[in-house]
Each structure stands twice: as structure tokens, then as C-alpha cells.
Amino acid sequence: MPDVTITLEPDLTLKGDLNVPQAARGIVAFAHGSGSSHLSPRNRAVAQALADAGFATLLFDLLTFNEEVHRSNVFDIPLLASRLIAASTWIEGNDEIAGLGLAYFGASTGSAAALTAAAEQGERVSAVISRGGRPDLALNLDAVRAPTLLIVGGADYEVLDLNREAQRQLRCPSELAVVPGATHLFEEPGALEQVKNLAVDWLGRYLSPSHSTERPTASS
Image 1 (cartoon, rainbow, N blue to C red):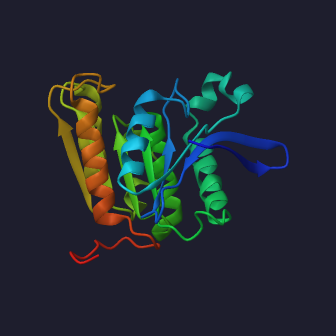
Image 2 (cartoon, rainbow, N blue to C red):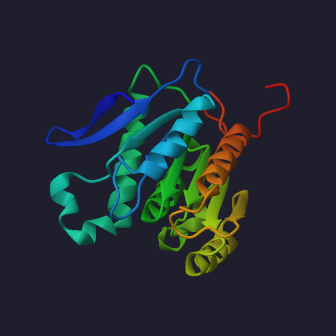
């Protein structure tokens, strides 16, 4: 994946990886969770599966190195969401990917950031996927318009309960997909493969080359 530098302000840049397959079907921006980075092996594995399915992917750090030192920033959902929104603006200004439909893939606290950013932007975001996420930490869940897929491990009991409650607050099309026997990091054999398949299917339904939240027709 080619390295990119996302300049948000003259003195604020974030590192990331951008992968754009030919005739990309849309772009997915990843928001990693606390204690992780854009080098997360699980997110990178999912990103590769999405790229293989024709989706562009952007994995990037929501915080600078100096910001990550302060633990409070890692759980500052409004801050993380603002960085995701800024990265979305960067995407729109990049000639290679401008105009592609936009989706978010969040893990852990990154899911809260993704949903918060989606709630603020309305139809600008076509789909959201959460893996082992904390949607309960998101702001304005009832304002999310993008179809949202919540993927949780069946053995991740506390997080599963939190996702069930969060789904009840959503007013957009949503599904809760439970991966049987999987724990929080989906390290069990075959668990991450199920995450990949679920993500590809969801984006195939809701993310198209141009901005749209409508389900593609069978002929598309």
C-alpha cells in the first residue's frame, strides 16, 4: 500500500496508506481503535480483502505521535471524529479518488468515531461498518443516516450487549452480525475471514462508485 501524508493543517499531518484498485467501486476510510494504528494487522487484512473486491482503502492514524502519548486523546471521540471528517475532505480533494462513494470501517473506539462522523455528515457517508466496536460511545447515534453493520464476536459478551443497545438507538438501516465463538480481536480460526466476507457483502450492497446510500440493483 502506498504511503500517503494527509495534511489537515499547515502544522498537522497524519500518516496513512492508500490503496486504489482499478475502477474502484468506492473508498473505505478506516478508523482504528485505542492502542492500535494504521498498521493494525487485522484492519490491514480486512483492507486487503476489500481492495481485492474492488474497493479503495485508506488506513491512517487519527492522532499524531505526540497526541497519542496523552491517553485521554485516544478516547476523545469528538477529536477522533473530527480527524475522520478532515480525512474525508482530503479524499474529496485527491484527484485519484475524488467522487468515489465513501464508507467508514471502525474498530473498537474507532467505531464510535466513525459513527459520530457519519452522524455529522449525513448522506456524505454511504455506509459504516463496525468491528468489535464501541458504538455506545458515539455521539448522536440517532442522526446516523448511513446503513450500518455492527460485527461482534459471539464470545465478546459485554461488547455484544453494548452493540445490541446501540443498534436500538440507530434510525438508519442496520444489522448486527454475530461471529460465533469469536472474542474481541477475532483471533479464532476463520473469525476474521467472516469479518472480511461480511464487510465485502455490506459494501457491495450500499457503496457505489458515486455518492449514494441506495442499494445497487441486480444489474449494477
